[in-house]
Image (cartoon, rainbow over all chains, first blue to last red; front, side, top):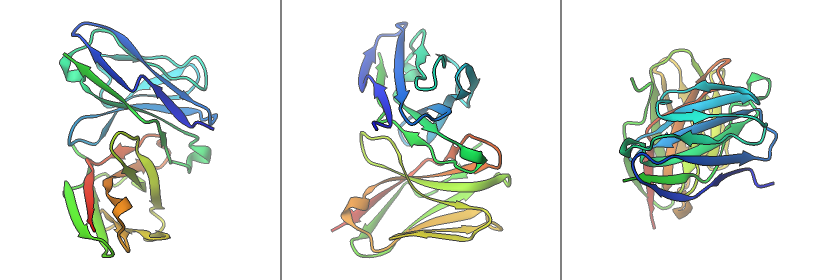
Length: 115
Length: 112
């Protein structure tokens, strides 16, 4: 049981390039989330999904896109990278069972630098 | 608009003593609170949680206290150990809401 896995661990992008951050969970969780963490800040929600085929915007969605074609995978797409997207990105999942299980399980993160 | 606030960016505590980490919130709809621990280069891991129907929850060396009238919660670690050195995030959720709102974190350093 690997939990939540993220690839790549590190990436350097040039301004205007695109990339996809991969996230996979093997816990059969319906709910998945993408966060970014900037230095000295908390985790800000970018996008989330309550199940395959359903996604919604979080607090800071601009410059990102997501898709959820399977329960296991929730990729995050950056179309035109900007220096403001330099951050550490975390993917998380939860079962949110019976609306009482709020615990989210996090991946190890992707450190992205845009120069 | 920071709905969950951790006003102490850092805290240093002697090994064996009690560590107290604080968290304040402004949204009265929040009714479930969690603490996460984060080591460098790793994702946050769940530590302990508390529902608004309780004022205390204990798990081994970790106790979380909730004061709803003051909109304040605290995490007590006793005795503190070197492995407790990490960043601690407070998070909150409103009933029926699958999203969490996180504080900015407190870096705890345990001094041997």
